[in-house]
Image 1 (cartoon, one colour):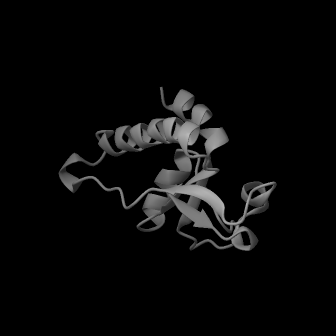
Image 2 (image 1 turned 45 degrees about the vertical axis):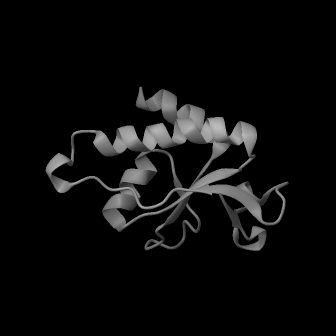
Length: 110
């Protein structure tokens, strides 16, 4: 669990949220290059998101937060529905997915 300073959070994340905004921090997620492209990373991320839905029932959190390893990883996270904290910053690697968006992400992935 982590907290995002409400004054630094995007409006959609900060709206009606306590300060700090409760969130789930997903540590670095990577797959060995030999297994890249096989869907292992996506399966891991989807498992984490499904777990976040369960966690949200016990310890409310507003979003899942990740820091992408680079621009390629950022694009990968964005395909899963994650948003940059500051869309005006093309190099932004901190991303979030609202817990209210997780179900849609899981449905699209199936």
